Length: 361
Image (cartoon, rainbow, N blue to C red; front, side, top):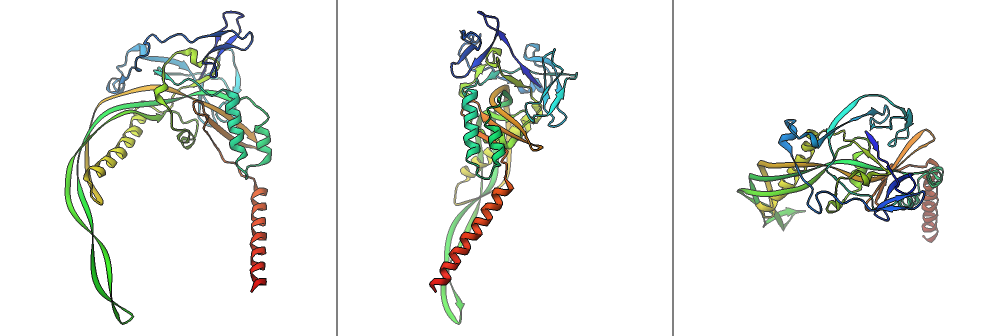
């Protein structure tokens, strides 16, 4: 679901928006600026929520909310419109959608990473990225550069904290070399062979995981959003709707339980790396890792993404820009005639080189 937040200007009544460049609410009509109100928690670290309580559906009502949603038939994004809207374009795939009914009860956002890159800078970053794709169709590049408005969307994520202690068993391998004599072509020669001496190894490793980040949306390909990393989560602010003024915020479609499963897989990979380091030696074999996970907490946070979705010759192209760093990722379009031209030029160059070699012989 995508929710739009609006706030009236104190001076003229027009809608204000959060201005990433100024770091405040700004009215485009009269230019009046208003600072975002301070968080009631001050500069304190964002409060974590208890994972076991959430799994047992025992979170306080203050941490929950309910919204009306519509699912896009093309990309499955859950979109929320204003009550007076009856049709709009899905911000994730540019497909026309109409309003519907249905409600969704979910965990409120705990933190938000405010936009730091303005729309103009995001659009320029996308154009620069497209310009480096020589095989992209010229028509798409020109269409994207026309200045069509980009969508500023806060994308939902889960973060997980956990304390882990892992007992392991395995083997430590030490590399050594032996020299032996072999017969080759009727002659005795000496060869040096690498061998590994394995010895049992066991022990315990411990690690505290802080803010393991998991995408909580399926509206965009995970490969795109993963490519936007890293995020500086130290800049997270306690959630305030003022940061969302002029932007949209997507609700999560990856459940808390599924998000935790993905976070545990990430933790398991890190723990295995720790185990191999603890075993030491030149080689390692890991037979078993038994991990005890405790003190699991989580947060629902919103991270800023600029999104452009274009319909070009019946094909949808999507581009995303990290709203904090300006990093770009998107669907890589291909131009058939540019590829064919490159192949022809390559053959001509190869032919010319071959002809030159033949003439010099």
